Image (cartoon, rainbow, N blue to C red; front, side):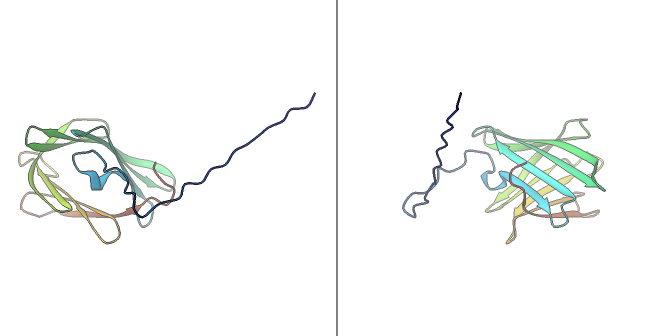
Length: 151
């Protein structure tokens, strides 16, 4: 008995006159897979509609996960909130305190650390900044699009 296997290949041609549909999300420019230059931290965001985004971040060292965090951004009436679940615990709610083109700032002044979380676009991708409300104890992550695609 012989089996005939047919495979069809298609290609998609991008047309300059056809724009992709805009991403429907509270912060659409954050959607995607992001990694630090050394690949030690990966953060992925996906849209779940106009009012909700889910994300996760994983820090690896020597091929092992040493930290993970589940994340959520939720539009609430005329504002937004960022929720962090470090190591699956939480959530800690950070309320939107400012929003501009390519930049959002969330704060939880009564939280131990961090009290402020900022996401902003950059020429290479996405920056995340964690600090106290006064700017002290600042940590920064400079992300670029993931080399392996969405993760």
